Image (spheres, rainbow over the protein chains, first blue to last red):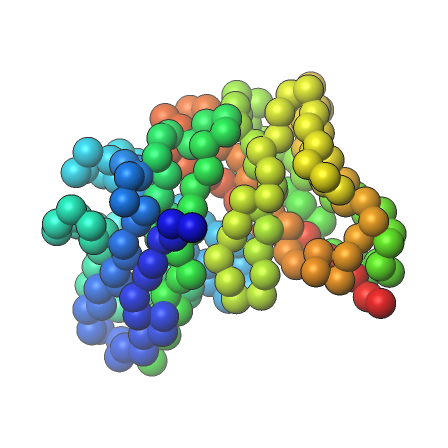
Length: 116
Length: 112
């Protein structure tokens, strides 16, 4: 069964450092997303990406964050100058169509980011 | 008012029990509704979409009441493997269909 894969599974970084979280979406999917989940809290939308550009972003996704699709398979989330409050599980997701009706968003296993 | 609101639980039920979860959403223009399941420290996985006429998938039944902005999930004949957090998820119509809004989830514990 095709799946979204994320690396690394766990990343520990010092406050102020930059991190890049990597994702390989399902190969025939065209829509890509990043979500995050702070421990004990709900899953929160960060950004959606389609046709090589951001289609929507949340208030959380400020100038500290950026996304990129550097080649035909990878989709990355860069967090500059990390803060303690960036510690969370970051989920990448992809879908073959916009998220209406029957369309499922497939989530990767997540990258647990710990900022110390 | 929260965009998607759920009772966090936990709901503790014995195997074989029937359990129901409810969810309310604030955006009356919302068009798409889902129940996702999340196991501890794992990714959310789609359990089922929710349609206006209500829909069933095996032991799971989902219903939508647009007038009350209310979604429900019924699990019959609970199994130990149903223990998880159930996430009510809405795609608000006014976001261009590119965003899912999650509730905080309802935790279910099924015991032998």
